[in-house]
Image (cartoon, rainbow, N blue to C red; front, top):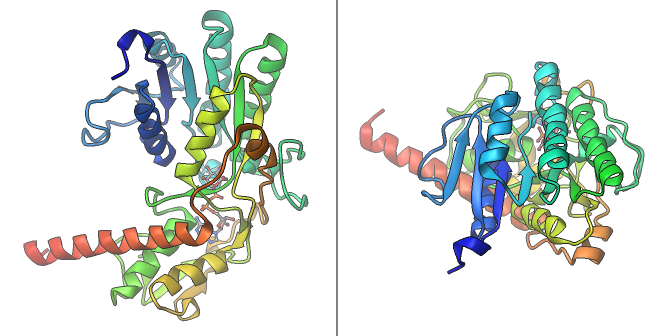
Length: 345
Ligand SMILES: Nc1nc2c(ncn2[C@@H]2O[C@H](COP(=O)(O)OP(=O)(O)O[C@H]3O[C@H](CO)[C@@H](O)[C@H](O)[C@@H]3O)[C@@H](O)[C@H]2O)c(=O)[nH]1
């Protein structure tokens, strides 16, 4: 048991999201006193009573300041964001406030009031935009194309500027796509996993809806946008390990965090349906309304710096990731079928 007076205090913003869940578990396992922020009330089952939750909006300056003062963290992991590039077109100002201004305010707070506090900022491969670079690393030029990418680029650059100007321990992890069974259904990985799982159970229609407001599996078909896009898909659990390593290292710096391999959305479909013994081509159709006018068509991380300097090694590969996601959706769907049978609803 770690003594209270030596326990480090960590603040995780956006703690109720996919990455927050994995990171909080990791920090608790390392004996941290964890403070976490979420916009909405959090299910008390999550992490039990081991986390000090603060519910509120980070763009409310008074809430943010009170959170930072109360948590008095040794380490801040700023994960809170408008996290969907496509949605950022609908809420561009909120995106800028939360994704750019909040990290800037956190830097300012650290500079003025907590100069020994360390910061991890969740940066994104979306800062590269629709890049031509064969692989992307810490030196690849930022050329974002969406309000989301632009807001993340601002945060990335302000964190770097404060680090260089004031010598503070502020770092960014440039996170490429990272998935897990905790990914919400509106991301392509989970949408595919869910449809494959449903099809494997003989369903032709799901209750869960896609971006068009139609069932994810509709008349036995999964409708997607551009399936030729190639993305570097990693496992969220491996990414939070990278976050911790980055903050623990003596020298603050930016790191590209990704598996180093790219797979097309079609390949994701192929593997997901194959896990269920199904041929993806019979189930997947393209709906042009799901195509993005602005998209990042190719992302592939070069995580050499993270591996060489911090010894990071991802534990879950692409096949393992897809398989786990599909199996978890099968389990969830079976549970929901069983409860429907039991209640007759
Ligand atoms: N959502 C979705 N995406 C589709 C579909 N069909 C093709 N795609 C393509 O699949 C890719 C991934 O889309 P998402 O899963 O929605 O994620 P994202 O836009 O890449 O954003 C995620 O990754 C970023 C980079 O790591 C993160 O910064 C961001 O927060 C988020 O996690 C995009 O190129 C998108 O065009 C579809 O039906 N739905």
